[in-house]
Length: 511
Image 1 (cartoon, rainbow, N blue to C red):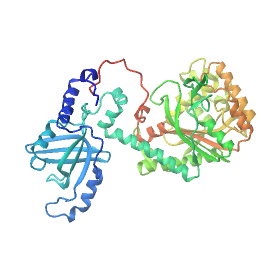
Image 2: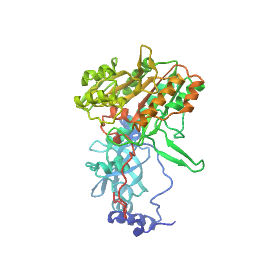
Image 3: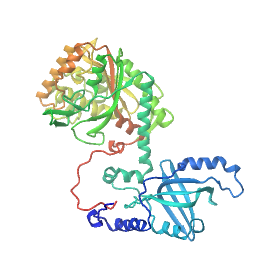
Image 4: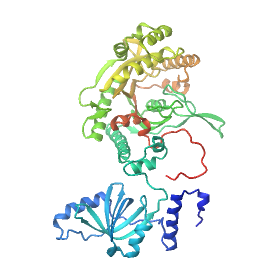
């Protein structure tokens, strides 16, 4: 076996000490990284089984069933001829009780000298309850499964440096139970969504991540080159236009949960790589999508919290009753005093926005000013679940016009806890109207709006085959997870968030 030298590996003093213990195991003919493990039970299941049979055990209270338990060594306390230690697996922790007389002097001494906190170990023995009342494994044998060269983060202090927590998420997960709980909740959220949609006869599909033309949202893309084709490709900014192509093709209910990418700034609510749910249903409109969304939000919240109520930033959020509905125009008027309908020119709306205290650049186009009024004056006030409905067509290039007001589109956004959770439309299915919207977007691009969508003529061609009336929605999985786990930074709910590169190092971080 070829092993890199300590000097070549750039080991720290602590790492070198631990590596010497690796070599000590090897000198005894023991592999400190064995390929196979014997495991008969998880820690939590072993404790539950013992507690169930404990009343029927003999007076000494020890179960005579031998178990093999595994996990990371997270604590150790030496008292004379006895060691109390804890190992942690994915289900929880369990105490190990090692006595010199049970395991032998050599094994006992090795456990004190060659084993360190952070190592993965295997222990066999029988369960009993100590005088202190803790269910424990009376160890008969113990073996090394994986020798850790880095010391684990301190149990009670965790990782104090936020940057390190994000860059070394593995260490963050070791140190912080609440961080593991966040990502367990995220998994529950996604599973709950899938169950909900699958039960309603939606089919899950996969559409291209690498696209010859981006669209479906207002955002700048990441660009790459396909050398074999000598062609520019883009990481998708949304899955919308491909999913609606499937509606054209005859699928009536489709959804996708996947990654989108937007080449934009990063802040506590935005990452360049993020996860979205989008679903589309033929023969539905935005009113029906709203009704389904309300039911979905209650189910997901109940699956995570056990009830349709939770706390966010100290505020009690209640999803049990009907969600509030109001028009975007009404909301902006209420919270900023501006009626954007009465100010159809960019300069007039810009002056009104400035007078109200909005932070808007002078070159911002009219629809983006409306969006800024929403973000700066309205969104922070919407703590309880609220649907804002009916948006200007200029801000909604993929949504169908309202029959009674062609200047506005059948679009809604859902806000909870002061953040946007969902964005939905009655989908535009008139191919020539769609083409005209794309052209208008191109004019905005020419006026300096880098986020405006390009003209997608293939999508227009798809619509020319006919798309039935359709309702669709996009829900940000990351923001939904932030909401339901009471987190204020999107990096707290993404396992490995994008980070600025660090300066090159010449040695290995000691952990």
